[in-house]
Length: 332
Ligand SMILES: CCCCCC(=O)SCCNC(=O)CCNC(=O)[C@H](O)C(C)(C)COP(=O)(O)OP(=O)(O)OC[C@H]1O[C@@H](n2cnc3c(N)ncnc32)[C@H](O)[C@@H]1OP(=O)(O)O
Image: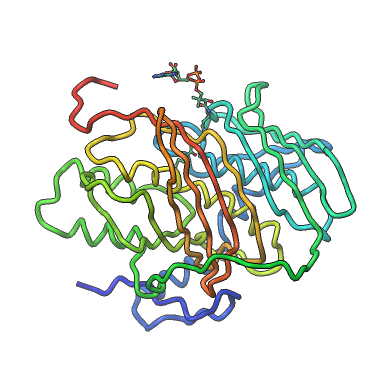
């Protein structure tokens, strides 16, 4: 079997030095895709200005649930908020509630309110609106750079580098070449391959199976935006990270429960804290864990690490989970 590992990474977290691979046609193909501007920048996060403080966003990828992807709404809301502040401030946090399911058949409007401009901090409130009603309310805060001797961070977990791991897509291709893959699983995996999610993921401990044992609710994976974004616009990288942060995050809470599936799950809220500069189109380690779940809700917390060990982003989210045993015969 051909070695399907991507070989495009020789750079450090500061980005830039991509090698052109090993001459393998598949590596060259990966390189070509990496050279294309990320669709997150050209389309998803490229809002249309309709009026003062009013923007319109369109959709790229819609999950199977047919409700809008939360990361898209948060990312677009942050783009709208960031348009109302100057170049001398950085987004440092956001706090959102998903109050209604997003409708994938119509665009989303983003209405920005200027809450306060202070000497150090600026706060914006954004309402994402469809059919005249809010689907998301978001507060975003921006801060001037103010270096201080007070600084510390946790230590990044030790994991294999992304060059030694396969992408989710490559893992699925590999798995589908095995004999006797159950038809239901084959269909599920083919559906995943058909997804046009503009995110690349390399799991640290892949689990390509529908039936898995209950484990500690914790997972780690390398993640980056598909395509090129480039250096320079830190606010844009934060918006892309907001998009990325909601993908493959909430299901961490389900890891503690085997033999059940979620007949309905959705994120209720989402918070992020941006600690320092990073490139969302370079591999970052996403460490996800769920400290608590009960009463049909689960809490997940995440840390995104630059590959040089610097903690770049912290995230937190609560979701609703309505679960049932996998062999449940009732029609949903
Ligand atoms: C792929 C990666 C995904 C990552 C995660 C995401 O991005 S998720 C996407 C972002 N997040 C979201 O879209 C969530 C948006 N928020 C919401 O949809 C809503 O706030 C909410 C469903 C969470 C709120 O639930 P409420 O129960 O208060 O709302 P509502 O009364 O309208 O009910 C919504 C639906 O749930 C059903 N429902 C309500 N309570 C129920 C219960 N105890 N048991 C069973 N079903 C129940 C209702 O019948 C209704 O179904 P019917 O509708 O059939 O009548």
